[in-house]
Length: 274
Length: 122
Image (tube, each protein chain N blue to C red):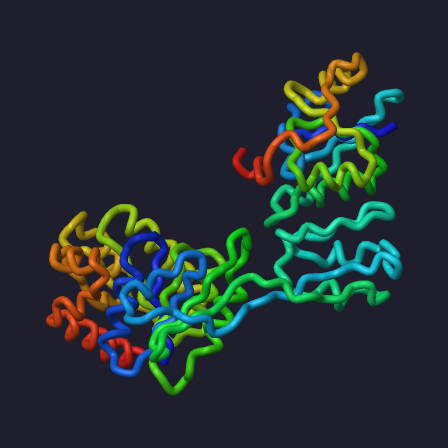
């Protein structure tokens, strides 16, 4: 069972929901897919240790063999290769590492080397995994793919998605059995929730909404969910005690055990919807 | 000789486009004969690498001089490899720029004039 916790807007409480859901479900794993700024580990015990390196293939060009036909350049969807006359330019930061140029080259002038883009770490009891993108690297998606490969179909895995609706968030949602969209009951929260709903409907997996910090803002998010027939899975109140525990790195289900039931009930409801 | 001017429209009277990689059109002008053609810039909506892509486009058209607003580092590298001379500071219409070029009033650059992705902010 794979559940992704996502949101259009940043700072709505994805990590809060993902960590507390994982901690409420015995034997579950949490995979933090926000490789540009993982922070779920702040709420888990023990240090994170390196599990593996992540690399993507980077092309190398043998200019002795190259005929400057330009096929690699025409093929590259990211414009990382320019062939101008008898000159070939490679823009490393534009390369996504798809390996297509090597396949397309008619004279085998392109070989591949490993280009390090980040690492994967886990804690002692392997209840938490996360990735870290190297500073200066623009694409985290290959690390997210590696992270997804660590999930065991027989176990419960919660994915904490990066915010937004761009490639890293889509990669974190794709292949999940269910997606929880976290929002806050504000105009900004609603606006970005609508973007996420459009994306998740395109991906085509079942989903529901969690309203975090319920009590602030207005009821437009709830009205939107009713109109769109989107299940409202839970409402987390705007509770000062939750914020106080959070600021000390203590998950709400540990500081305030009454919330454990809320997360377990949410999981049971999700299971019934798949 | 062929001069490429980045343009928002297809005519000599069209307004110049200050962006290079993400301009709408290239107006390819021969200042000696006054002949011109408008070429749509396929890279205007590219996800990335619009500058190098646009450089390839005008290089294949046999352009020797480019007149535009600004040029970023990747585009400049590709233009340099093509041997295309780059003049910046384009404002007003395409024909005004051709005249200015003729009078030697445009600035030729030997380095990029703006940072990467500047054309995406306009």
